[in-house]
Every structure is written in C-alpha cells, then in structure tokens.
Amino acid sequence: MINIFEFNSRESYFKALYEELIKKENRRSLNLTRAWAKQFEKYSSGVYFIFENDDLKYVGETGSLYGRMVDLLNTKNHNLRRALGEKFFSSEDGYLKATSRSSFIPEIEKKLNEYIIENLSVSCITIEIGRKEFEEWVTGKNSELLLYNIRKKRKTNDSFNL
Image (cartoon, rainbow, N blue to C red):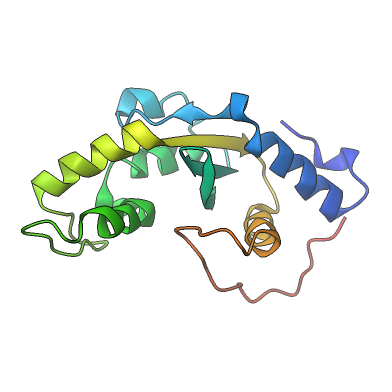
C-alpha cells in the first residue's frame, strides 16, 4: 500500500499509484468465479486498472475491491462487460443490447466470458481517499487512450490537495 503522507503533492502521489498499477507483475488474470474474487480484500476501497492484452482499457474506483470484482461476473453489474459485449458480439444472431437490468443472451454471455478470461487482466491497489480524483487524473492524463469507460468530470471544488 502506498502511503499518501510520503508525498508532498497530489501529482507525485497519483504518479506513484499509476506506476504501481501499470506494472505487469501486479496484473492478475480474470477467472470470473467467486473463488477468484475472494483474493481481493472484502472491505477495502481502492482503484483498479483493467488491461486488454497489454493495453490499459478501463480505470475504475470502488469502495470494495472484492465487491467490484464480483460485479465483473455479471453483465448487469459492470458496464465493462456491456461495452465488450457490444463491441465484439453485436453482429451475432439474437443480439440484444444488455443493460443494468438485462444480460446478453446465454450464447453471447458464454463468448463474452471466454473473451474476458483469455484477454483481460486487472491490477488494483488499496487507497482510502482520493479514489475518484485519481480516476479522473488518469483519464485526463491519458486522453488519447480508448477506454471503455470514458466519463464526464464530476463537479468538485477540488478540495483534495496535499
């Protein structure tokens, strides 16, 4: 865990978090089982990167790393699954767009799971404060990346300063 108090600026803290998350040795393959998700701390807040092969494709923050990894098991619970399904399987017979209330048809869900297991990895780190600000910092610094979760900046008074 990176200690926020070791840094004299938000920029240096965020750079250290980024460097830790981007390291190849910190990436874990996605197995998409509850047993797999148990390797993540149940009550820990944090940030995570999801890589498609070696490319950063998703930047997220969560109040529960374990809970968010469990969300990856269900298309209704994670917009990354919906984005991947739409990108790779929208031309399949029987395709219906998934939402937070409905999954893809079973054939597409099976193909989506296979794709995720074969091509995605995740890197995460526990941090208690500044998760959302870090997520916005990463997407702002890497605006050239084609992320699956581009978001509009949240209204803030930018009170998170070191």
